[in-house]
Image (tube, rainbow, N blue to C red; front, side, top):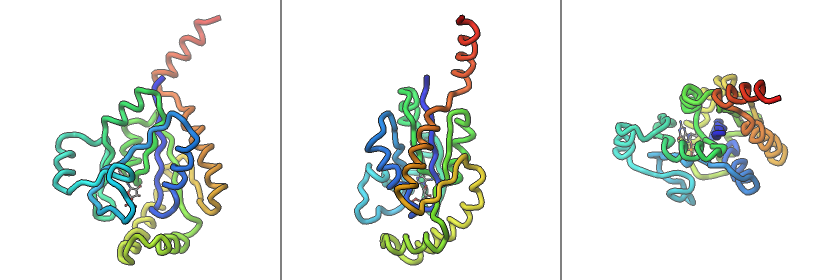
Length: 204
Ligand code: 5GP
């Protein structure tokens, strides 16, 4: 059996990374895809941990060489998912988790629909999102406003996702997120389903 995919989307500041980090501590056989970006690292971010930080020129070269499974421009910067490590993790039967935006989700669906589960994570209100971004104090007011504006647009595509998770109480959200992870692992690709049906009928 091959692996499966779980796509997480939602405004930055809604708690996606904290949820993923908690799950990575306790769950096995998960590959968290580290994206490549041209945005500046925030203070405390490390190259190769949160993102691979590269220049716009390098990113555009990688696009030309077909290195990305998907890529998009978000808030004026490039973000992309490298193809090779994802294919490798899928071959190893792992659950591959992506933290990508709505554009990336659309592409992953087009390429891997039968093994993909998706969840849109968000705050209870847009006001709460703004409070969290201000409290996080990693972005300028201009960047925060850009992110809020972008999240208003993203929210309109929430119905493209299998699940919506409102991160109000972290412990409750974590419990729900673990249930989504469990469900995502149960997806079977089309070929495996066909093989299973065949063997089910042929084995008395
Ligand atoms: P941030 O700059 O806050 O880390 O991320 C901004 C947005 O970019 C988030 O919505 C995040 O999900 C999205 N993002 C991060 N990596 C990728 C990627 O590889 N592809 C796409 N399409 N979006 C990404």
